[in-house]
Length: 398
Image (tube, rainbow, N blue to C red; front, top):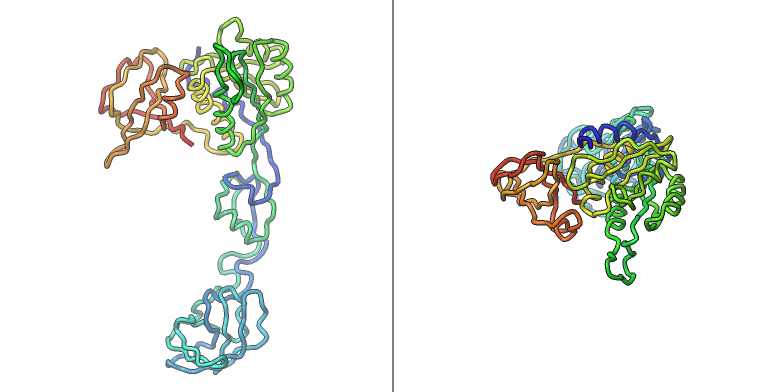
């Protein structure tokens, strides 16, 4: 049995895939750039108005009010036909190309239309007011976004403004999920005595989709070595295989031996945590396998401590274990020599974040987990934590 820190180091050391794909930019939210991106054109690519109003020669409005002749109307996407000269102006829309001769734009609100051909300008403006000039933001060939940048909505908009349809990003590995256990049944099926519906598969499928990963469900296999081996061989079509159950020390806990038969090398098996002690991690060239325990909370803890960080590292995202601090609002017993992760809820106060432990009956208690937002982290050898202590917690709500 090894420590959490050592187990995480081993897992993250082997999460080194580089999977790069060119995707439509609209599919790249929260993905990481796999290339430097340079501008394809100047921004703006032409002199334009940033207001609805009138493009004019500024020297005409040294004294206001003044009346000017409207020589044409220019809409966004249209090319001006007339040059603006002294005594004249052009009605112009936001984003429209500035006509020759104009050196300022008066906002529509600072004018009074007299008829379709004349306007009275009511307010003086600064030189070049309400104009965005060609290349004032950046020039063609400018480095816009560096490799490794996380694409948010604004950065996707920047790519779109430069005409990029697709871009190279680090993408998620393919992930397969396999459930085990003769007692597990699919939701909607009739249960016999001693059987339970499958809790872990829907839980993990949702957690993986929250990372932008569409997992493939390989189905459920009973405690049969031949069938397990067949399914694990099927799982080799994918980069990452996640199994649920059958990783402890019982006579029917067959995952360790079947992975070995499939030429995986087990690097981690049993970690000094509660719940989740039986967690298993194995590798073979171009494949990772995570063996999560069969109880829902143990599986959830294993996912957030090991699986999720490994996938985030592959995606070039932050894979650190972000523990936050709060104040314990209620004393709690640990009763374990292992580092413990206990379900708790947050109770924010004016000057601190309170953490309230939730009573639970063990690692199969999904009712307790459903009421929780976080796992309260209790250090090993801490039998009792007092109310008012500063403690750490791990968020798992997504």
